[in-house]
Image (cartoon, helix red, strand yellow):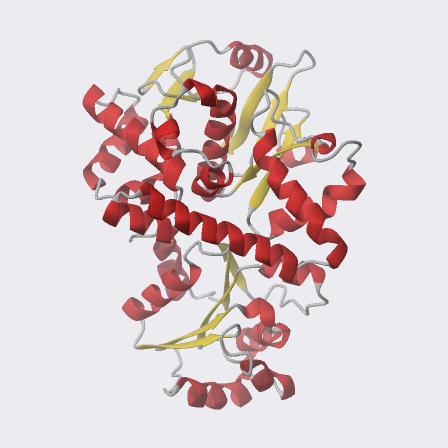
Length: 431
């Protein structure tokens, strides 16, 4: 299956300023697969080392972490010669060996001709919680997320449709209605399947939602296991409570995160570590409210007002135990959850595209779901789960701040009117 990360990895390989690369991301997003596939197609050989399946590897890094010392030993362990620029060295689950992470500093300084990529599922958590000597300034970093809507469609063989959608997005011309309906169905399928590569592959091969759900449940179980394994004892329960509660809060009219909904009398001081853990692990992400629409937006964020979204739609559907047919046909019983589900979906697509995302609220309670900086302009984005034409909140924002244009995501076809770019939900990846 094609992953967009390949373009980044190719540019990294050819860069004059290449440093050892840390590829981070939550469990099961395809880090190892992407790295090994890249190594197979772009190098003569790959020397792969996994610190989880081979704990004795840690001993190699205990005495000396200079490249001159390590390379002959690693060649012996791998059973193949590691050659400068021709071998890709891969350290997997590197969060389990602090010294291996520190060694990247010396590879950068003393042996930059060796190509090294390291991967870690809970690297953010490990580095934050332990006393890691992190090689600041000596590494390149990239986060791999679950597959986005475009990658999902490509995995299902919808290459021509993807090109058509991109063209309609650029020109603001409607997609032929039969294709629009087909793309909306693909969007609803994506809400059920999500972007975890194993789930997408199973769905592409079998179209079996029950099989996919089984895989999703397994991934959810591994997340809960990580919460116990990579967390302090008194934080485990709070982290699980918070995680369970994210999906509940997405069903509320106001999706702003409220501590009191986790438990009666809940406060920030009690749960902020749990939220930080979920964010660092890549399982969830925070979107902060911005008090003024000025550059840089980061200067005007309200640290006490935020929303939390989960990083994968399929896992969200599995966690809520949503029946596939209920989502595919958007049944009325889901009415309270449809808005939060669509918002979460758009947040995932924008995050994968590298945006820093905020939301905005007026003094009288008009709310804009997302505000991003796109091509140098501050752009408001409103999300509607259905073919909803009313956009009072967007009017308040546009009258107040006069943006270059606004984006409205809904079930409606492409168009542009009154400074509003109408984008169907399935095309959020184009933004």
